[in-house]
Image (cartoon, rainbow, N blue to C red):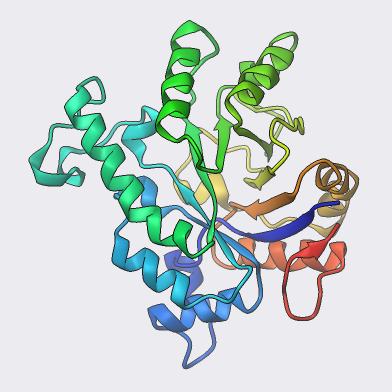
Length: 290
């Protein structure tokens, strides 16, 4: 029976840092992380989607967190087919994902930046979140195969934003595809009222890891501002409905990461606190025995 680790998709979100959740004396970079890591066992690093990770930061994160705490690192935008500004690339490289020279350099920089976490045993997963236009098909399968080759030995989690991956007969093919590459499927909780809504299926495609990301249930998903998309406060009843599925997932993998992405003010940390309470979190905030 695997462990359940609960956390949020950021600990440095501007609205969170200004909300008062971090107490006086814990509002600098080191204090925030130490405070967060004393309450949760996992966090997602979303900053690495917007800029390549740096070795120094990764080393500091490892030093400032206790044994057992892990970071899920979000893959850099260029590596998942998202638009990327050239200014974010090293040495003036063009933002051209089709150029092998560019890809080789970006992959190398990303791997080097995350390596201190892996060396310290703090790398929980590398999250590849693909854009809504990344649809099932031969091109997508080829992309995933090349990604698997580049990341051999890494703990990988994959989130699809196009709902077709998990609908109808495609669901079985998607499971098989991710299983073949050893990639953990990411289940999501989001509003089901939109054509772009990803269904809340909970596939297991890796014996090592499963990930569930709670995005909130705002109907502004895909149309509103970032704040509109993620402004949602989960109620206990909504979280409680997930408990049987979470425990079933934990029964099939070594570790289950439960992450709240409704990062608007204190909504994510409050939801993570509520979920760990419902699961029966130990008093020291360590991983929850399933």
